[in-house]
Length: 130
Image (tube, rainbow, N blue to C red; front, side, top):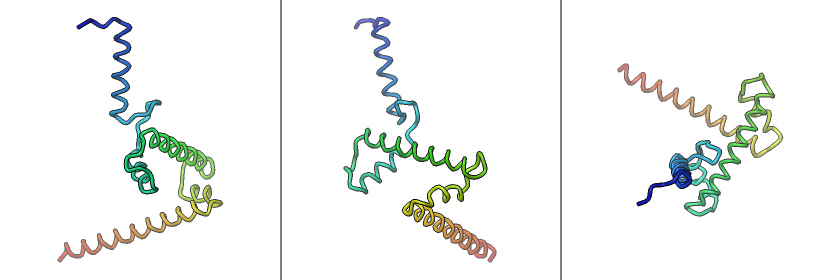
């Protein structure tokens, strides 16, 4: 067994760093992957392979992060400076019928879930009192 020279040691360190980054799910830029699992499932649901290429998932996640970041920055400029409110997002997507409809659906569903939770908590509270 030979002792690694400084040049060889750098090569070994380089491989160790790459392995560590991949285990943590980090990108080349050092950002942690947040949506990989969900994107894999969505890609499969839309007709991709059960296990899509990691590069494809990473690329799609970069696009998603870029879209979210850009939309957030635009929303911060629209309404009260430095704050994002639901109305700001609605304003940004108002001209895109598909996005607008989806936002409205999600907001409606959110309200229904709040009402259902409140009703459930009230029923549970009444049952606990008896």
